[in-house]
Amino acid sequence: MTVPRKIIIDTDPGQDDAAAIMLALGSPAEVHVLGITAVAGNVPLALTERNVRIICELCARPDIKVFAGADRPLSRSLVTAEHVHGKTGLDGPELTEPTMPLQPGHAVDFIIETLLSEAPGTVTLCTLGALTNIALALTKAPEIASRVRELVMMGGGFFEGGNITPAAEFNIYVDPQAADIVFKSGIPIVMMPLDVTHRVLTHKARVEKIKAIRSPAAVAMAEMLEFFERFDIEKYGSDGGPLHDPTVIAYLLRPDLFKGRDCNVEIETKSELTMGMTVVDWWRVTGRNPNARVMREVDADGFFELLTERLARL
Image 1: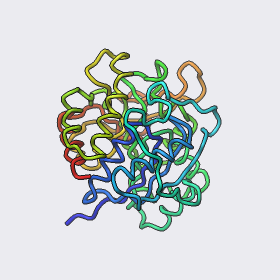
Image 2: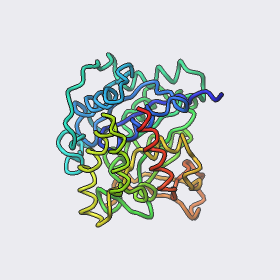
Image 3: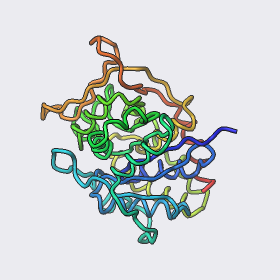
Image 4: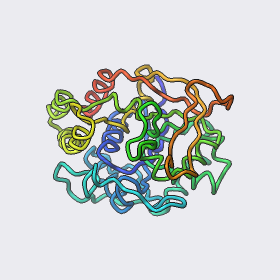
């Protein structure tokens, strides 16, 4: 019997973050969620930490430890995405205020203490938002870098360009300085860029299968997706919007669903024109050493089968 992989989820929910958290909580045999840390991003921190607790309660997991982290990027003003996610970040269903408590202490301290107390190479960081909390932890305690098993992240883009500017994907753009610290840290990184996430679209038939589960979590998720996808349908002219963040958890559960290669990735932090761009050396022309495994392909049908099956377990 395999031991579940220990993970910390760092997130800024966001409907697609909610789907990622639900996928993890629906997969206890494979992943053990040590805690969930909230960061400002899609909406301000007061909403992201609230939204994490709402999702945990929807999944009947009020035992999950939830910590609030950074309320702003390292050195830039906070950029949010209410135009995509709605004013709460989880617009769509009718949701009740959470009753489970926020943990005392700061997310950054929880990340550091957990990595120092667990055996080296056993904890995976799953980042679904801006990398501010991780960068702060690395700055405060650089020795944690060598203890991280892997950091699997949703962020960046290359062949697909950006989604908040022509060059930058939202999570990296919110805090490029933090991303720069993380990519230079030596932690083994797996990157789920827009090149992958734009292939997993919430087609109507896929959302209907989720709704048909009829559990509170699944119905709420279907209603979130119906709200969330309206922005991308209008923007991209597609049947459904891309479901970005659950690709991170899906990779832990079914790495065979994805294909990519090891690349050097540098983060643009100087130019306002291309601020937050992930400069991926896909064709290996720079001679710089790879620092991330960059995914480019995904089995979209397999991904949605996995998501639907695990939502049915909640």
